[in-house]
Image 1 (cartoon, rainbow over the protein chains, first blue to last red):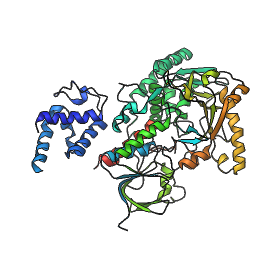
Image 2: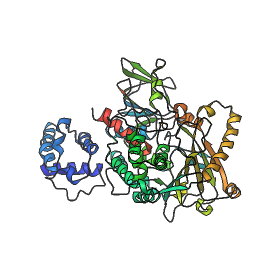
Image 3: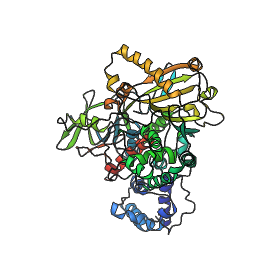
Image 4: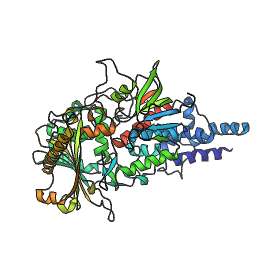
Length: 87
Length: 475
């Protein structure tokens, strides 16, 4: 999985959690919270959807790694690839 | 005993909060079952059929309404958390509502889903109070009302710190209390904030077909997520062992094991499932209960001159007294709801007129009556309640109204207990709320009325919050 694929995975999850948000111009380097109306309940859902759909675990202490799309990609892409290598 | 059912989570009660908790948990892969004693879902907010007509109970209006695009409010959070598209609720906005005080409603404050209307009404009728009112509104807007850990303060004292006209103070408390306070005379400020926002800063709406539309959406989401549900299957006991619930026992005697139990039936009611608490230590049940009259009319209320008001909160006395009355019904104050007066658009209308009136009542004056006396009392109070409420609506002769009336019904505190199991018919549960939903058993949590988020949106958020907080965040 590339970092771009990974960003798309996160965007797809946000689109399902917050269908009322416009995701066409999300800037990857800007914090998601600063450009979208996402609260802590929404972030919890991103974490839980990652686990439900992709088997990716994000411990609570590492939630801040999901701040922006870029940081999501940095943090999650190796996890996705490690998981793919195992299966 | 290996065949005993085991669930990750057993939920007691299929009301709004139990269903919402169930949807969250099932969506995230938990094995969940909701146990409901009745054959209908909805609990306090349900519906029934009588002689071919469908009646709503509970819901006058869905509070917390905000228009599409407004974010960060309870309605939006709820829709996101339950993955509901707002069009599924098909909400139609109120026309206007009023708070009408005085023997014939001489002082009246109109409000709509546009807060500026209410603010200008306050400015016009209470010019000396408007600055204080704006300060109060600012304080309400910035208050963290969903915090699960905040010290309780008196709402009366906060409001009095901003306003010094008792009439305006009471006119603010009347709708807020009627739509959600389990406490007499005063409220916890956090609860006041939740309701003030829900009623005034947000607003009222309703699906054309009423509460069943909302319940249908919830049931469908729950089913799709894989949740199980057992109807006509109450829980009669929670077996506690070493500080934990070991199993629940159904009315049928069947034992069910569950890792977690979420109870939506109320704090004192849940306590009784666990066992008889030592005398003097039991949780107090609420004392606030209501009667409601429902009249079905053979024409639209607008044809009778009642076309503008959606909800009217009324009080005829110098002070508004929100307390358990000594009489079976307190006729001095109440709430009128005319469900026809939502804006359903040009091509939709309810097929018949509906006129509902709710008043405070006293449980023990209704509970013990023999059946024939009970029915006589109902007819007598039905007439009195209607007469009292009509003082606050445009005048209509007795003859005109009675010839337009094609059916009537009335619920009493006794009906509420029968269908919800709430002790003493206490609609809004016990006066003391349990924000974190904890009980003496570490794997039993409360949601719904006694957790303390109010209104039907609040009830659903309560189920969501407790499922998130106690179960999903920890697994």
